[in-house]
Image (cartoon, rainbow, N blue to C red; front, side, top):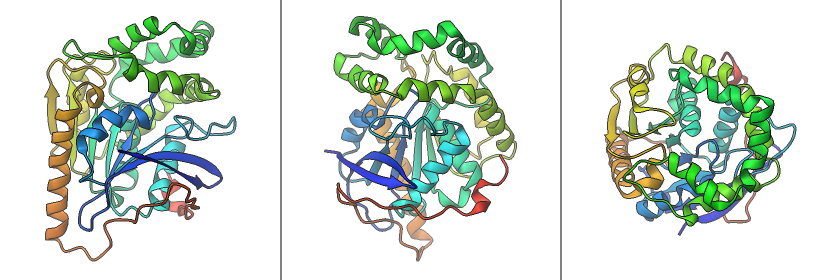
Length: 316
């Protein structure tokens, strides 16, 4: 069962879920959730992975049980740097980063900026620069009617919210109020909607910046999973993204929508476990001398992240 943990990162309170035990020679799997989600949306997937892998699901700044602040930057660059600092704080050596939707965009930027700090990527229906049809949706939420809708949406009746959740799933999936609960709790937490709207204000610039970074194909080994029935980021957009990845493992999940780790957690867990096994085999064959794991932190332990060097902040 995942345990809830907390740390202080450059004055910002972050929360995360952790399961499994770190094992030397096996990379930690770090999970980054989507735009309206939180670490808790990964619970079905984490339960399928079991305790054999060391898994950490982060509540991104402004989400879940992590802190929300009016002065907190929400742009992709700032969030990516926060994730990099989080990895430093936990002393995670070359983890595998799994990103869903917006978390996938963060994972892509991490790999583009810090390729030597990651073992591999797993992308679940990632947000990316080559899906221009997303722009009208962003414009709507930045308009006055869109902002009003965003602020009232968390308080809609549960049946209305279930309709919205179902639209993010495929025809072969099922949903329940229990699956909706992490989203309801996250969106109803004061400060969440303001942070999401701030994020959307920089969305187009963030995607343009990520697109420039991806002009040079990523060298990080990457697993890409996409639902055939994804209506949020359609699978046809994967072709151009995968052209920017070096030999990606690409799988289309039939009948699955935009939330693969929730809709078919067992299948996604199986594919990700294969990725971890492959990465572990490659790592051990190279006989790395650096530690490949960090000790578990206690639930009350707080750490201050080391400063990120200025070179990490250069450029896009």
